[in-house]
Length: 140
Image 1 (cartoon, rainbow, N blue to C red):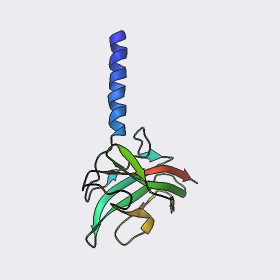
Image 2 (image 1 turned 135 degrees about the horizontal axis):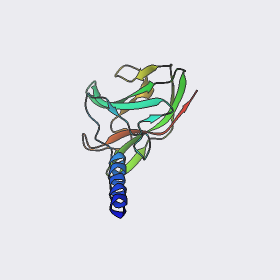
Image 3 (image 1 turned 135 degrees about the vertical axis):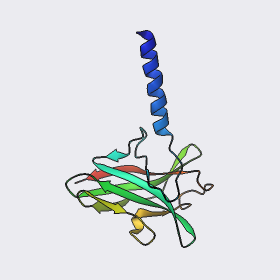
Image 4 (image 1 turned 45 degrees about the horizontal axis):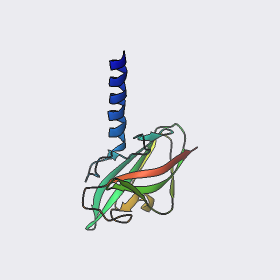
């Protein structure tokens, strides 16, 4: 019994530790954006994704929110970059509305709130940071 308990504790620690270590921002591929310290990628029926893109020779992180609820929601957050073991939040919050069962997707020419200059929060070597929507709140 003691061995089983120790094994479960170690397995939980490994899984929890992995959830807290984000992956690097990827060019051209949507990836889940970490929303909380426990690694959650969905809050109140809203999923968050990010992707690194190049717009007019400048790198940006674009954001996608997917509302899986059957009602419109207000999504409010603060952009943040994880680099060198620390979260670096931007100043101020952003807010958008996402219709029921739909997505709001950032791109080079779209909603400015869903696009963030790669080095606008902190300068980091290419590909070595992770984007997150800190303090994400979802309200009906």
